[in-house]
Length: 543
Image 1: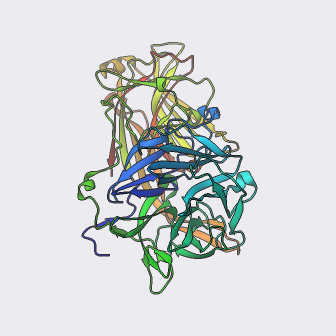
Image 2 (image 1 turned 45 degrees about the horizontal axis):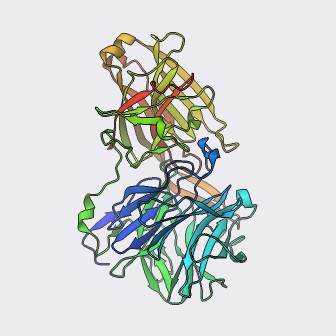
Image 3 (image 1 turned 120 degrees about the vertical axis):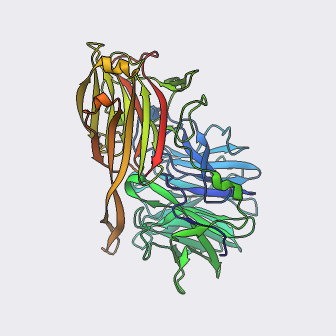
């Protein structure tokens, strides 16, 4: 391709796992999994496939009351987005509840109330398809942890309005005991009278991208592997979306699992040869490609979109939460409020027993870069006795550092550091947790106007190789060049508190999600709307 500008992959360093994307005229829209975080199913916009920004969400909260509690690894798995008959459709699975659909006349909503079109456990990764003859179909996969079976792709007829399924489920491909074991995440397209199912296989961290094709919607399907890691360090390049441009170029968006950083988004060129796609950089006469280190954006891309960057830093002056923020579970609007002079008041929710990682009102963001610093300024002038608030890092290993005000002696303050590890024996964390406290003089807090600044730092300490699994032939599948990060939480103001030691933990991803960082606020007593912490600013800086 002859492009004037080349851009390094990944094009989006953020945990936007299982991406699906479409083009509507000159605009590209992408969505991703959101699991238990709300608002759910982020919608990102681009006009050049390289620069992306969150513009909205499909869900305010998940459609099940149980998600007002944190259920790690549950919630919204791989969704799909389509534009049909001047209407946007989002199909998404909740593996314990079923497959849902929402609709909207505009990409930013309002989106309709989710309708469960397939109730049951184990149905995942749905994608709709409307054929030229007016018939509609839904392709989906199965989660072995719920259905007792995996590595199969199924198709079921769907009503033309996309609101329900009808007819019988037919299995169109079984990848068990083949190189396509763990095949899932199907996306259904049609080109030159062939039906194509783009589907990742081989596992999240060391898999590949498979494409199946057939002259009939129900098969039989033949397949090719069209993208694999090859000699690159981009492990498991798969699960994404084929998009074309107004001028006829073709691209493929997919994720790479970088462990603690989550599943980041890459953009690959795609060509068609003999009615088969080849994704990435082709080596010789191979029928597959390898991930490109750099990619040229479309020839017809909007040049003005180069200035668009994901929003991360926040001064809380707009009167609404910036779009990258998400809660740890279903949320309520009265958890926070904005102050006329600027700043956001975060209520300290009652929490007599839950570990820090299971608090629903953790306010979180995805990591925006491989290494970065985040400075958070907190105002404790409204902190009530028994309340604690500060910054948090949430992953399988987690930590929090903040100010605690004693419930027994309100003049007694201390810096509280919490560290823990999740064990995931159930949908909750089953966490083990430790806490230390160092007293802080109230006079020093008064001199600082009760404002403290905390620093959250992510640094790569080394790169390692790891055997991820053994495949169906008994061969070890290794992931190369894995970044291993340290996370450090520290207090940086006022100077009189420099004796407060920093807290450093190794970074480990959460349950199917990358590590997130943000703010916590809880009370050992009843929730008091007048208590809590005021968040003055959050500033990210890449290092």
